[in-house]
Image 1: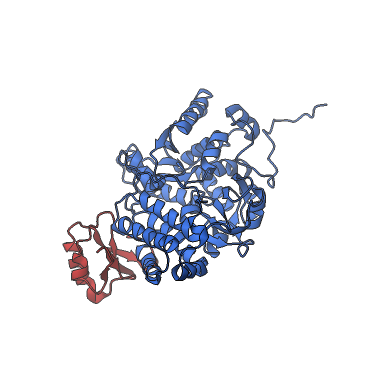
Image 2: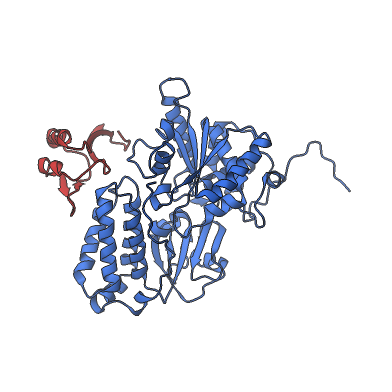
Length: 441
Length: 74
């Protein structure tokens, strides 16, 4: 029995309460499977799409959490302000950031592998909305780049009406994926941050006004364009609508990438990842730029940018690491600071000298202790170093160090009075790469 | 209404310390010699000294920007 319809309406709108939205289990979705599931990209005018994104309340999923529509308007405004010079010099560009340099975060890599066409739809939509004639997709390393080049070629063979996307493999390094560093790299320079303003929205790749969006942000845009802002905001909270990809790790049974409705409590996410393997002591929310939340006290904290910010941590790019009671927060944080100090591009004095000084002070407290002056020196250093770099590396490093000594002041007191705890010498829990040089080629 | 704000390009700054010598009212130095700028606008009576400090910066890292009081950037 077949129902007869006047016009095939395309695939039905998915249940808005059903997660995951972005990443489907099973083999990576090729173009045919992607179009069967979601249908073609709808024809929407640029202003209509930007208004829809604004109404949805979508914020950037790369770390800073800036409203996605406002970033797009900044680019159209900058482009309209440019003096003539023909459109060649001044047409905007779109830069999709999938370089994901936060150690232990895996969500962008998974999204690009499983749903490359959702991201590429988002790039095409964003490019059309801001009038971009060039689009770049930045990824970490040659392997994802090859798969994405194949996906771009598949779309061109299928005759999709969009500008070709250039796929760029970005050098390793924590600051290499910072937006001004990507702009620098694609403009022929080293992958290190530059001093802003001018922001990429005003003067980006090759001098063009450049929209930089995280790849997950663009995938959400591809869904909002199809299903509308109300569908997007059917999950999440009024102050943090929609869903987001998170990477849950540490002392949980099933570490990995999950898609969550924003605003769910910390405990629910730990349960989603199979529960804890050992009694938990704290959760590091927001990765190397985030903050420590003691458990079980923080069990009810909503996992969303405003929820975690209010609790003294950060959502960042959605990285959550559960620390067991058998670990030492101070030793873990000292290792994070050592790593971040090694990631400085060495361009700004307060970062070049300040991060190693903070890392040394934390290491002294964590592994030697019995010295009150080091803790005082550390408390003096943190506000001196924050907000004084061209990029946010020093600010993030200060935030995570400050949250450790604020949330675990009793442990600091123990270390500086009686020496390191027994857990300080145990193997690390937070996964950190061996310190690699910063993003210079 | 607009006001003057001192900013440092931290990439260009090499900690020569000229600004801290010429404008100690608004510029201190951190443990490594890099400038710490007092928050807020430059008071009118220091504007001339601030201009002199900007003009004397060996790496042209120090800038004086006029910004809208509403919070726009200059």
